[in-house]
Length: 430
Image 1: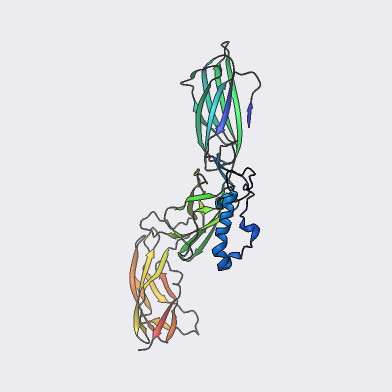
Image 2: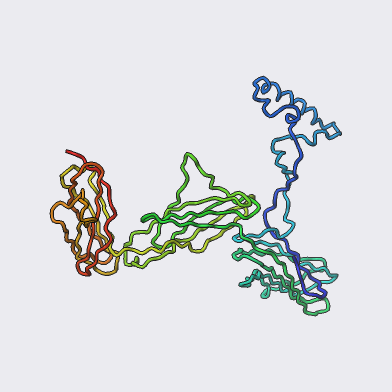
């Protein structure tokens, strides 16, 4: 929609949005002759399936005779694609149409001289105004258009990457000398609204040391969007892996249907191991952001980037105890070694440490116990360092048993940390 100030001007702006043409569709009312004479299950009969198609084809060929001036064949399907209603023509944009966030707004602007005389020294400006800012697209102040003859025009093209939702105004202005030498100022305003093509809903779930991010992308446009890329860019110290459907049941990741089409993406996130003092004990809940690029039916590109996606705040443990290896064969009443690792996640030296098996209940007899001294002493561990050690255990009962209550304590700070999670083992007889 164009608006301008009151007054008589020799010049006037005309604006046309440059975008891919659309398909010209004529809603068809056509039919297959077979539908008039036989039922849809007639071709289940082998005899009919062999003889009926040639018969119908010959009748259809006669009805399509070009000498037939009754146009009796105008309602017949000449080709299966006729049912789609495509006329074979493309339709140029008749208006600004729907403009979506993430697209590139491209406009062909023509300034026309509607008077009977020449205008000179024309300074043209074009800018986009939003609720937040003004973006200059064209300014000929340093090199004005020398003249536009009577009935002539001056054309140019402007582009703008749409990064804001809501009302936008394309402002076109011209400062020029009229026939009588008077300096005139012409402003014209073309308003349009930018809508959101997609909505992105996310869910974050944390399972032990792994975080899962589900992104649900919904199409709000009136046409299909073909996804070029839906990529998750993890924040520092995070790594991301996209999880895809089983190859036996592949999902179509290429497009989201128009008007509410939905597609889901699943990412597995893991916190990288700290390899320097950059990884402090302080927690962070910033996971990263999604980069989404797509194309429309005729190849118009679009691109969106989400805000930072937040997860559950991560609080790193000061001391982390984990099992690295357990023997595959464990025999009853025979000692076995468990390979463990103790990691210091702080920026200071900690220790010495004591490792023991805590008792859950005074009346509960442990089926797996420490073999030998009940307390193992470990030396100090430097900042962001770790140490490996072996703990000798012995199982006193056959079958599936649990190693429970492995606990580490800092003897200097008199602090006991959370016990190691239970681990199942299978105990065999000799």
